[in-house]
Image 1 (cartoon, helix red, strand yellow):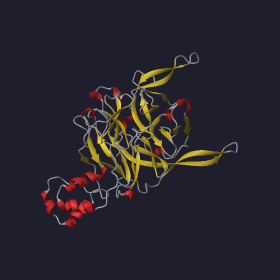
Image 2: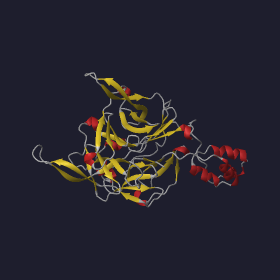
Image 3: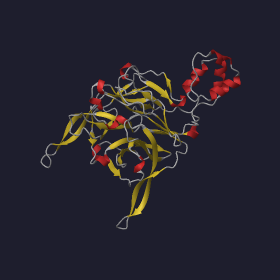
Length: 412
């Protein structure tokens, strides 16, 4: 495509070492990935000299980690036109389930699908921070007769994020969690919170939805609001403000949004929250009506608060999703719990668009409990939506299902 940069240089091309300096300058100026520039410097002194004359590159964009059923995961680089990069990953994580990422090359990992949750850092591959595997939730023994009791349950986490870097004091984590098939709430996603660094082995509490419209499907931490925000299937937002702990003192509410138009565009495959330019965006992913429902298009909405007069003549705030007609230089990476926004103007020419990965198995609550031979995480519906024909470009469709995990972004 015209908006993509040339692929990285191949190793072992001796003819490149004899090129004149002006030609080398044109070649290296088109290399937008730091790793590819390092490789180009190995081609000789002329390449190294021309690279030194260039302006430093902006920070890297997220990489794509694609698990495989045989062999280690593969890392794809958007800035290298989706080519692969070699990256070390500890052997124990080769057969892991990945359920998101966080800034600073942190990966959320579960070694055995539904337990042994922990954090792994790609820059410090042997640094491991344990995450909870159990949850304390309130259980009503007999309605209206006995008080609630606390029950400790196993959980599995499908998305998570932090209020700050996980190694910083005071970090709070939030997650979307599920329960094993033996639980009476197996088909419902719950909200959980825990304090990083707390030696307690369980999450302090979970918050089940009161109806299907409020079941959560994405989350982020808003530093402007100092709150965890959870997007629901009804396109409302469940808000949990800091301080989260102690839980009884936490402030929480639901931002109810007015119903938006355009539901005739096709099935909604996913919804994501992302902050961009100080605004809260909802990215809606649309697909086909036939399995396996590959991605066809996206719509992007911005939160708006409008003052209206209610029936009692009082002014009250109404929340609306207002559609953006264009991306206007935005680069959006969408993934549950790890969506990020970048700007073309900050050094990423030709990269405007929405970059997406295959998370079709998110709603399958039981997949983590199947035998390895029967687990099928989709990995092929990955690419870029440009907003102009042909709109969706599938970039790594050659991958079949994985027995271990869906793909995830790696956020530098």
